[in-house]
Length: 347
Image (cartoon, rainbow, N blue to C red):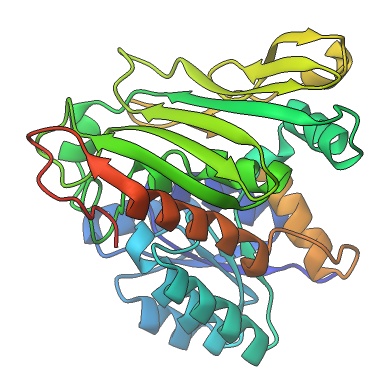
């Protein structure tokens, strides 16, 4: 297979990870960012072209194969559609989009121009998550009685202060999109869409932002499983827990740790320690940590798809479900904190 030629939109924290992998798996031709100082340093470090205009980068590099989208959430749809229209495949960071209507446009563009649209869902590669998905798919747990998802992470004031888009309704969208969309994706991957949900959103520790920092929900899946989800960016100093607990007919288990990377308990043993012991550390950024570092596996899948060796992957048709579920949750939410001024934080 010829070397894949990559363009990268976004020179932020996750963009750095993508740049290294694009250069490792193929050739990083060019990067784009509106912050000129950051762009010059980034393009110099990676010995590639740099552009402050996304459209100009596309025009100057018709030889490119893939655009990696690592821009603010609210730009994912625009940049993905423009890349597909220019004849490039797209690897888009989560969330796919901030609205289902935009996600549908992305899917339509991929079909129209006959290109792959792949969305980064790196938690699907966590060893314990892969093992659990197989158990659920093969009905090894029997009837699922109930679920609980906990997501207790930390995002300090500096995380928002040093960015012109984080914490905004238009470009961030809400912490279910920016921090916890992976958990919603796994909820769909395991158990399908939600039949109904209700909950409350709070902004308890970040009065400077336009979105929530905490949410508490109850839900019922279309398959009839009741559950709860508590998510927050207010954990003291660091990320403490990202977990899913399942009470089922044939087993009770909790996959936890800070990044869905540990089996906290299981009875009986349904996932062997040799499976969940092989985990990667989290992505480390400037002052905070992200999800488990599985982007190398995302790129391996991308390369397999481009070479024709793999047909199924996390496509736009698959990723849109988590966007739909997040929209559903935000629509169903009420606001429970005085300094949180809007009751429609994302749509």
